[in-house]
Image (cartoon, rainbow, N blue to C red):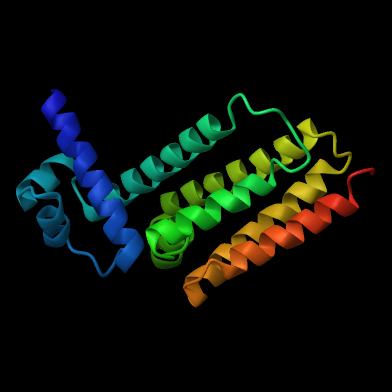
Length: 189
């Protein structure tokens, strides 16, 4: 049983990386099997279709992101600048991954019309990030936390898209500076 779980995890992680880098339609089950060092039959024994595998990859990616951010912010004292750390995290993550953009957005662009579950996971991912930012701002006693959280979320999303296009962390760095100015101008509201 443990071996099956390890294999499943290996397939999901491999497919998630390939989908992010190349796109869903450009990656075959043969490529996933080869990169995961399993047979194509093994991939199909774990996942009936590439679409089901994509849904597992997106769910895994969302859970991994949320766990990481929960752990990262656990025990830190709330502050006026804590939400800015999300921009730092995003810039570091994008640089490390090679500026491939948002997996949820990319999957929605490719498969959202034919596989509505993709869009549902993407909506959940964006809602969770926005709610995290709002929660940080509420904890830091911003009276207009909802509006600011929405603005920071939009800055983060736009900057991630531009970082993909430019293959650079500069848009995320600029978005962080804008977010910092926005928070500073709303500190006493």
